[in-house]
Length: 269
Image (cartoon, rainbow, N blue to C red):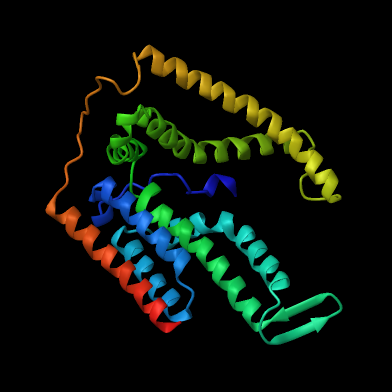
């Protein structure tokens, strides 16, 4: 259910990755994002999966939290898998019937695309959302993109918007669940009928959700204004970010692992 979605939700724990500087984790996420989209060989995919599992263990992420993170994207991963299976027709034909053709290359590519999506979400969660509070993430993004202030880019405001958006993902999921239960108690049915009827049924969820979202945004704006928030100019940090030797070691170690995976993949082609 939507109230079990952990994407965008901070998971409090005392672990190595929780204590790592958020700037290091943000850079590591960018590195692993590139590695995820480069690798193609089954061996390197398995090695990268092992690295991600190591990160999960170091972050003390339980199987239940991991499953609640992956569960919402499984339908999308299956959709991507099916689309690629039926559209990629290169390689040896395994099955053919009328307009349907399934090839060995198409199956492998479809599996890789689906696995990439899962890796992407898990890496986002373990390196950013589950192990980093929205405030620290905002500070990290602001520090990393601070050179853009030279060309008048509102870095602080952009970082604040991104952290607020991530923070409200679980809130909107819980609000959607609450609205659906309220509508079902009034006789709404989202499980039976034709596809068109189901779409029409979800309109009764979307409209209240939009109204609630705008109300929350207005309340947040009023609260920030009441606390004299005027952007990043002249603001100080209660807990400024400090880069330690442990953070540098963590960044170098996991970067070398990602580079090693990419090098092995390119050598196997």
